[in-house]
Image (cartoon, rainbow, N blue to C red):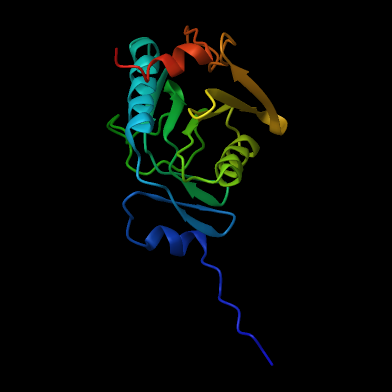
Length: 186
């Protein structure tokens, strides 16, 4: 008895597919649709972008972008927040930002949603790390922790008053406790 195996999609074939809502990642030959963001996720994502951009954008050091498709290293992912050093932001000849980012972020931030699999999100951060990303964060609001992912697949755990790693050149100090305090609207 012969069992027919389904042919795996290529990256080029994936990129020709229509976008999904919410977005889908293509990594390790697999399509993984991201869950629809909920309250905590959306709030953290917005405040992280605002906080980084308030400092890094005004000084033309870096720019934090939410839900940006990044295609590199044989994968196409949509991190919750992608931070690019200012001089690495792809631009058109006229100086406008391009629509298609075919480079790795310098700093990638993922916010774990309740229905997401930790292994899948870590796999995405490891892919980024292997392909040039300097810092990855995995924010887990359930246990109020942040995993830092660094080159060489080094992982560090940050909780409470632990100072979080920030992309070099951005004058920002944050603790895990401060990030999770953003969830309180009182």
